[in-house]
Image (cartoon, rainbow, N blue to C red; front, side, top):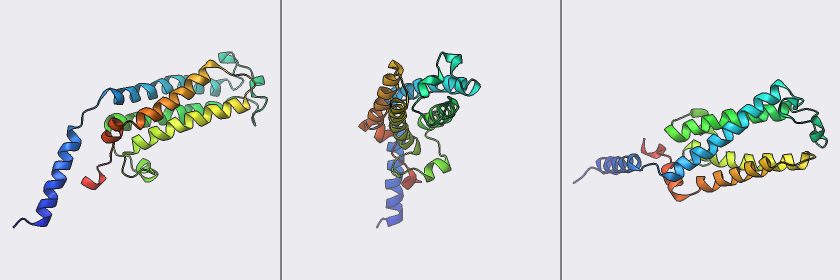
Length: 175
């Protein structure tokens, strides 16, 4: 007769082996690439807006913010630097390493998924919302806004592909 705890240990061991055997595929690298594109775009822009809130350093005018609740680019610069630049670096680190970050796991709404998968999904949503807010507040529009919005959509799509979801399923129940 096999001890039930021994049988459970065997099942858990098989699940751990299966989890470790899942290889990264093209879609994983595509997600890394998309997030890297966002970082490359957002970090320098955020820093430049913080250094020069008038926007002149990158050829923008505060006149573009006529409908915005602020008179310069400092708030957008902080948002770009922190939310669209530094946070995606943390997300990318988690995606690549599947590392455990306690604070990120605490506010992960999809407990069955690794926090970095969830945050990738959040990031895609935030990108789309960010661009839509820009479109409502700004006087003029840019092709870059369309590109960033489509990048957000692409991140959401790649995040929800079966290979991506399977790779980032949480192993919390296996530990």
